[in-house]
Length: 65
Image (cartoon, rainbow, N blue to C red; front, side, top):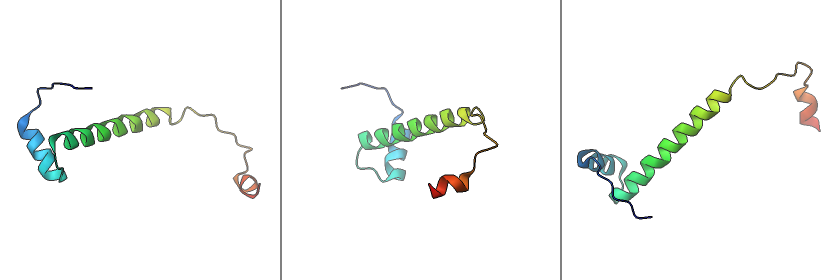
């Protein structure tokens, strides 16, 4: 999907150089991957503490099954 974006040239150059990328496209795709991974981690943290705890659960018994 072709997309025209007005990106900060200085930031792109720095990302390409620091990341050792071969192209602007590679740098932008890597940045998007990192951004999505970050958002997914945040979603996971939101779920923390929302699961019911079963005090009768025996993890040792579950391991031997």
